[in-house]
Image (cartoon, rainbow, N blue to C red; front, side, top):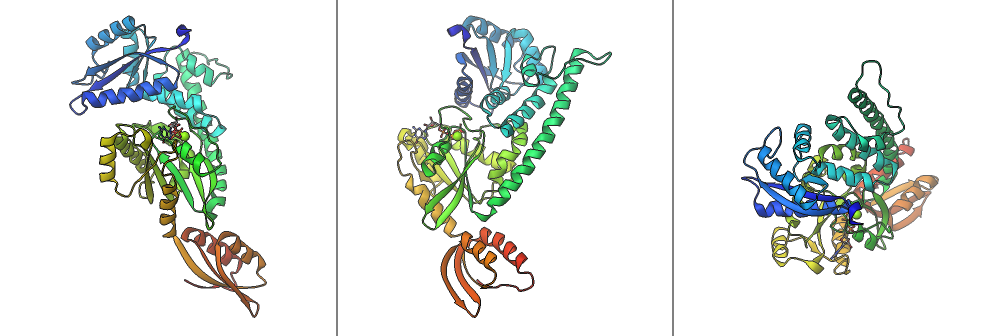
Length: 427
Ligand SMILES: Nc1nc2c(ncn2[C@@H]2O[C@H](COP(=O)(O)OP(=O)(O)OP(=O)(O)O)[C@@H](O)[C@H]2O)c(=O)[nH]1
Ligand SMILES: [Mg+2]
């Protein structure tokens, strides 16, 4: 039984900027990534790195030591926490004599395993092929599985490697085109959502976003103790109270050093976050890395241009929290909310905080519309909270409350229809 499990040896590094403690925490995360893939960690080692070797990353001597350790622990594969260049990877594989993977390779593999929808599958295949292209060597069993079915026959004079590279490049171009099509469809879908206030749950992977989503809406998304359990966005209506209905989205988790091309290829999934009106940042207060994780999240938000949006910070998992981190978090983020989604502790405070925030986004207006404009009147009434309505001389006067962004959407629609007879509004 144990034979079938892939046994892995983890390698981390310290340098003048990174302490032993931090490296251990990074390795804890790497071990979790390995666990998510179903691997068994049989050893961990931290290498003191003074200079990075361009050819072997850790230097030949250290590579020999890792080879020894891999033999001693019976590891089938060696996983580096740092990203390796194609050349370093190849040389290390030759010295150590085991399959070598780096952090990015592992993250890509997890994404590939967890992708369910066509969109996620296309996105991850693109990111994987871009990663593999410069690393292609003689064999590509992993790739064969992904682009299997295409006849692998080269033209005259082409080596197998050249054929492989050409096929991969062609496949990349095709996937890019497919993603552009998907993106267009998605844009149409999202446009329909302009009539509602949109909130996204965002955070480091495994912080409890999906668990919170399930508490607030009947979404029933999968929540589990695995990294990147969620890869697709789920959006549901959240009835915050009788008068406040919003769209809530649960989306993909972030991680430290999220591979750049992964962010690029998951752009259409991340679009939901980009277009959100409010972001709920979920952090895991039980993790010693909680505050660093929040920083990583901000880093990704910055990369997708969503760092200036209004946000609410929710520290989850207070049932198993670390007292010291709790104090620090309270000090750094006095406005933040502390809950346990699993134990259903203080969950209502999310609702209250969101209500408080979105009320600031509301406006009250009064609009006069000719009664004959039944289409415009019902469009308005279906999308706002009516405060009062009176009818006089064929004119309906409607007082209502709605979100600023919803009014912008409505205004464009109503005025487009009433281009000749402008409706009369008073703020
Ligand atoms: N102890 C504790 N565990 C929790 C709490 N909330 C969620 N969890 C657990 O944390 C794990 C991850 O929860 P998810 O809701 O899947 O987390 P996520 O942020 O959606 O993760 P990804 O989709 O992988 O990014 C699950 O095993 C949950 O049961 C909590 O308040 N306390
Ligand atoms: Mg999730």
